[in-house]
Amino acid sequence: MKDIPNTFYRISAKALILDDQKRFLLVREENGLWEIPGGGIDHGEHPIETIKREIIEEMGIEVLDVNPTIQYFVIAKALDNVWKSSVFYLTKLKNLEFTPTEECKEIRFFTKEEAEKINTYPVVKAFLKEFDPTKLIDQVY
Image (cartoon, rainbow, N blue to C red; front, side, top):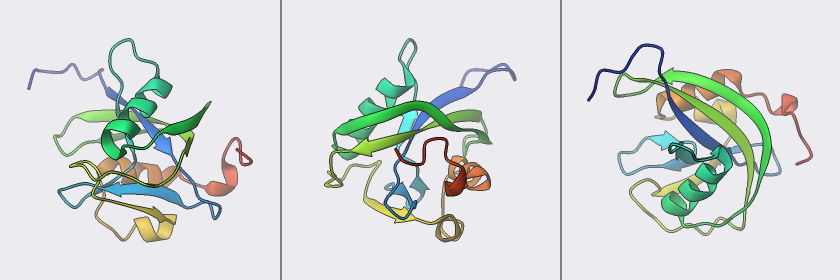
């Protein structure tokens, strides 16, 4: 891997998908770790387009809507020891009928407390420190 200046972050757009109980959706990858759907923003790509692209690639599900208001912004040192930042947007899916891929073997809604007990990526752990469903910017979305 190239030397990355310590002022650079890999930026990801994450889909905050909530059910009616304000639990959030995580996907289990082939390696057994749970992740928040979404991925790296390509150069020149808008974060909302990233979410739409990544959800199709990872899950095969159409995105109905992405609220343009950023809900969370977190940073975490990834498993490859590179600092990454992620922006989270409330996202609505057409359905939950996913097509399994390496990046999505299983999907499930979790409470914060449930997610703290499972094996997740560092970005999920960082998100859990911030997540408070009572303080979402647009709770009726």
